[in-house]
Structure formats: C-alpha cells, structure tokens
Length: 297
Image (cartoon, rainbow, N blue to C red; front, side):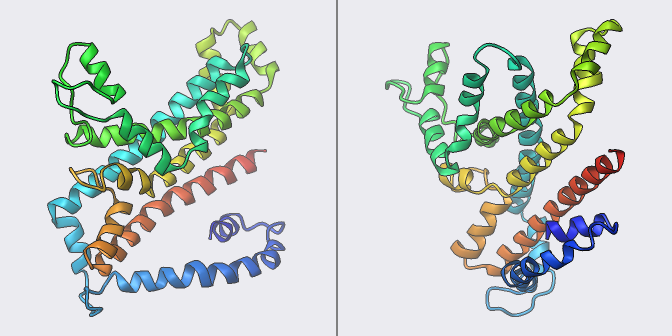
C-alpha cells in the first residue's frame, strides 16, 4: 500500500515502469491486506451477532468514558513518544558525534532495540515493582524513592502516572533507533557548510539550528513518522504490564480486548478502523515530504 501511495504521489514517467514489478506484490497485498481490510470495515458496522447496527460501535467509542480514556491515552502516547524519542536521540547523536568511544556509547543506547517489546515490558515491571513501606523494595524506581525519603508507590496502578510510566518504556526502546538514524544523517552534513558558518561567527547552537537541522530534516521526518506509526500500534507493552487496567488501555489493546475478550468483534473492528484512519495521514505526510526533498535535489 505504501508503494502504491508513493506511485500516486509521484506520477512522473520514471515511476510508471515500477507498476510491472509492483503487480505481484499488489496481488499478495490484495489477498493479505486489502480483502481483510474490507472485511474489517464491514464488521465495524455489526453487533456481536453479526447483524448490521449502523454507527452504534462508533457512537460507543466516542461516548463511553472507558473508550474516551483509551482514545485520550493513545493521543498522549503519539504526542510524547515520537517527540521525546527523537529529541533525546538527536541530542545524544550530537553530543557523542566524533567523540572517543562513540561506538560503545551508540551500542549501549541501541541495545533496547534488540529486545522484544514483551521482554522490555518484563524488565520494566521489575523496575516498577512495589512492596509495602515496611518491606525491602526490589524495584529500582521505588528503591530510589525510598532513598530520597519518600514512600514507595504502586506506579502501575496510579492513574495517570501509570500511563507515563508505560510511555517511558517505549521511549527507552525507540531512542536507540532515532539516535542511529540521526547520527548517520549528521555525518552526511557537508563539513564545508559547518566551517563556513563557523567562519561567519556562528556559535555551536547556531550552527546546529541553522545548518545541521535543515540538513537532516528528511531524516527527522522519517524518524518521527516511523516512531509515530509504531506508537499508534503499541500493544505488547500495555498488555504485558497492565493488561489495559487502571486506565492505561490504548486503541490497539482495546481492539484486542473487545474482539477476543469481551466477545464484541464489531467494536474491535471499529477500533481497528479508527487506528487505520489515524495512521494514514502520517504515511501520506511522510511521502509528501520525501517527494519534496526529491524535487529539491
């Protein structure tokens, strides 16, 4: 689908021969993605018995307090995770660029990317583990709180801080991806431009803001959009750490809960449709930015 969107967004003569090579993949996508997407769309307008119920599933989604909390949590995830992951990854890439031990530092930050979402969630469940005030803490976060003179907290149960605690896990995983991509992009910025800015009297911050950032804009867009899509689909972290309880559910988790736990496949399909609609603008925007950069070159 991304390939077809890319072709439609860039209709020059050089792209038309690509259709010959896209046809086999398009056939497989039709069977594996397009047909199920159509079935899911139709299912979104049915009740648990399979009977047509119009927009009832969508009305439920935007009127029930639990569903509204789920949508709000998803929005918070999509705002915080891409921005913080990209910002931290970019800052890290800038500070360790050409420093001694650069490879080791990069490896340490990138290591969480090698861990599965479920594995990372289990690690952080131990990090957030809670015991009573009179007991010895086994969770690092609560032990630090105790060292600072505070009372241990049930971090994964206290809303809305539990949602932020889950977001930290996703940021921990995605920062390494952002750092690697942006570090490679920074090394591609022409040295002559940086030297010219330095000769003109620009300080390090001005060189970064006026030379480096514009030079890696395409990479920043790719990183932000990629992490945004991954965040919209986040499921493993929420399911493993809280199962969506304590007001921590997101759209992907609620989709699973409604379709397979509550026996409401129509509501699950409606949530899947909303998730698809939320992802598409990000993909289209990414393609437009890449095409604009291609036109400039």
